[in-house]
Image (cartoon, rainbow, N blue to C red; front, side, top):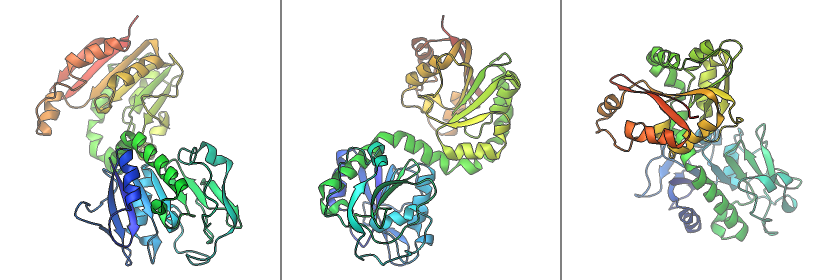
Length: 400
């Protein structure tokens, strides 16, 4: 798991930062911001960063000059926020979390605001700030005005300049009163950094998924549109009665949603669920909201009551989850006794292995010798299993 540390100047990431990241099982890669607004790796151990693939988090120490609006650093931060990759931006780097360009007020280094920095009530429930305690009295507040983006949550304030720390969305934190970053070995900033590192490690699995699919969401529908008839044929195998709720889990751009809507009819409901907001945005752009609702959620922690679902359709998802049995158990929890689960892929195992130039994996959770016992152990009865040359399909119903 890797965290990219973006900083001005030269050299590797500060030792204190690397030590905290290492304690959470994370490695640091340093990306330098130069005076002309470009970026470069800091040393031979670092590589050129091209987007967010393979990045579990960003720490920004200092902001770019002279034009943050066009800097690669800002582009990287924007891409990270879109994919919900955790970002901690300190000092002048906090401006990269906003839509601002150059500072609008006093220059960096001007005297701070009035009084000590204090936390807001929102900090008490924030994933990073909660548990970090009170900032040291000697920390100097930032003195430049800052217009926060819509929906930002203020986490620390002081008289005169209230935007001292804030959260943008679910994954971006800006802390303006630490201009030198946590390398100063301040106890509070060290605790804050440790909280951030723990959050990065805990979210790494979801971060990798979102980062991968966010960059590909815009082209996904066009790339795989030819598979739509196969999805329609697979959904037909579910044999759902009209009415009730049908799920498209890991829905991507929602290619199965029209066929699910056709089965449950106007009296039923269709819900497309995916972990990646960019995929849901693409699904909406392609008209899937005409067939059902879209929801960003973890498929292993569904926000649905027990026995509330009649049909669960999942294509190309189960074999990419770290704990397939936990997912199957959760899907059994939400499925009614007369419901059905259909696992699908538009390619068979042998076809996929040959396409990727690799042998069949005996540990594949969709292999017959693995899937059958997994379903039986999680509340399902497997009634159909097909690993054909051009599709994979498994149909299961809840066990009595």
